[in-house]
Image (cartoon, rainbow over all chains, first blue to last red; front, top):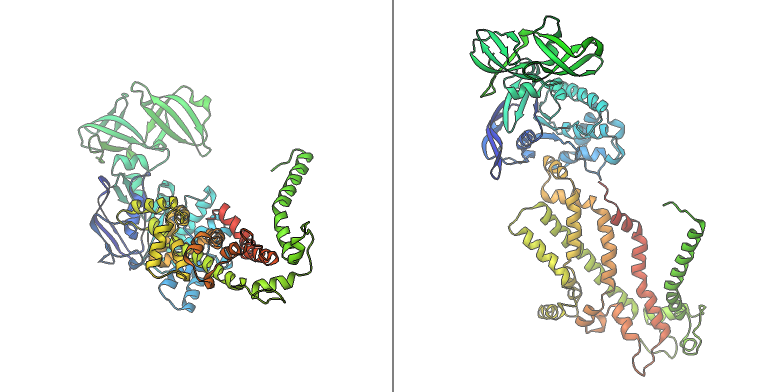
Length: 351
Length: 285
């Protein structure tokens, strides 16, 4: 129960295409996080799966059954909305049981299911309250409770944590993860927050302008991004992208520095260097004019421009390093095993 | 609000008190008039303190229980009150149902010419009963609805104001609420009944008050389509009692009727005041 296959999905509003020929296979019990910048079509995709948006072409299969034409309820999936969308005039109990009431499920079963969900979510004492008497985190939990009681084949989460404050967000993130592991229900989770994506996902889908850029485990996406977009989108501070030339296993950056590369490719490339893969090294070939130093505590961010090419570069060095030690110029070396190379035309990964 | 000066505070209170006296004095005189005899009224000066004939006067007006020497009333006020109540409630409830449903359709459904229809309805705001009274009379007469409650109620039911008000309110309901209901498997009418109506409660209450008073105070339309005295409403009946020309009416009865005519709207306003203010001010979502 809970296999979802998206096959060649397309969606357009008038003449603007928002989803381009998109296919993803989601396994039973998997937590898939769809991440991307705002306007990339990730919410539209989720709403298409939910049945709240029509599909222009392609098909959605749930447990090998095409559900394109089915009403949201008939697809037997539940959704948690960004603004919770609780019914303000109903108590927590009524909110959670409304869907079951419509399904004409016997009263004693409804109350046992709601009690059960309330126990899982620690909502037991709040069942008689109205949503206006709840805090943000509690409302979020009720919204999840409403999804759980239906015992659906899949949960859809539409940026469920974006209305919470930072501390609560971290806590709820953990709770969602725990809950999902406990219930083993297939879940699709949409967010624009890469930390949420990295921590929650079994596999993540990086989307950009209606296209899937990369599908993979968080680690894969981080260490071997398939495209330039993924490389820049995932990771904070973002990956440095420099112009370079690749020839006989060596890369010559436009600033003049050279790096060893394990690639047979010949010609111009975009070179991706993660800020944390730099180390301060007097013999390092990467020469940086320092513009700004930020102390974050666990590490130090050095912002600057490369000599000769004037390209902007950010390096993240572990530990606290004082300004005086850095000075105006600094030499850096790079961990060459962690090099990312991208084609300059197709933006696809080369190495 | 922060008051800066004490004197301003007292001044505004004095102003308000004067206003209340100004408004309330005629009502007081009418009340006094309903507690005295015809002779007391006919001899100047007009009494300012209540007399001892209250029960007698109201009994006569309401139930047509005439004291010696009084002639029998053509219609007792009780019957008029009943007619007025039926008409006012019919108009109010009818207007609420129709406007809730049409606002629901306009906000949540896509159908051809939706905008056009909405503006057509909106245009009827400029056509109150008085303007369209002749054609409306013709229609009602042809339908054989003269001298009936249906004839009193139906032509006044269609309401652009209420439709517009509910439309504006529905537009503020977050779209996610609709989607959540769809995910819960609610049909459009279930959504309407279980979610939309309950969250419009305060608006409905506020409109109920306004529309009830509007319906109760109708004069021209009932005057036109009721010829039988059985169907008289209290506002009309009151007008008929007031003497014209050389005639002199029975003033204690007239004053009693006036007081009785005031009663239902006052009761409704007082009973629903809390919701009324809430509905006009608050948008609680």
